[in-house]
Length: 164
Image (tube, rainbow, N blue to C red; front, top):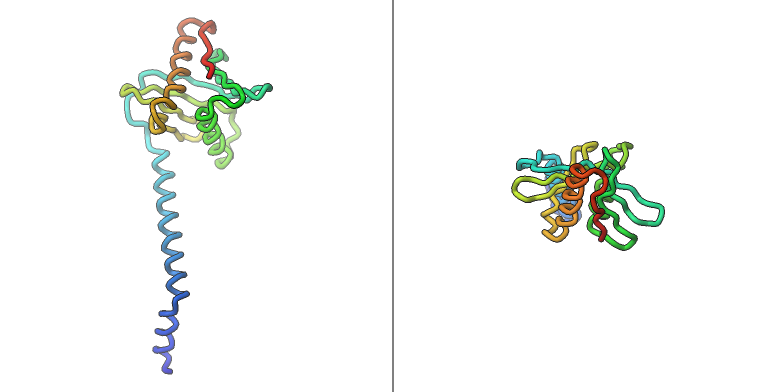
């Protein structure tokens, strides 16, 4: 066979097409992952109506405690086996910190927006999660912590603790 014809038959080999398809899927996945990463870094849309800075700690008895950062007032406590949505959100934020090699303490900001949405923000990484995207009931747990933080600021540390 002539040299150009050999090249053509090699190019039409099915394994070449499989390889090209794999590279195409890889490129598509990489570009979509890049879009998702930049979407998480977009600025918050909406006016912030209230916010509370929180510290999240694993307690010795297996519970997770949420405390107001400045006053150390307890805002919520989730016993072992409770608050799975809240635990998942905080775990994902902490995992993001590990990936970015942020060693700051687990401090976050819960923000209530004027349109009623609630977000949790990690000031160390700049990422935030719109909690209403996971349903009103799940976001309500964070609204309760936001309200407890507002009450704690107004009344001192005598405000009630949200337990679930």
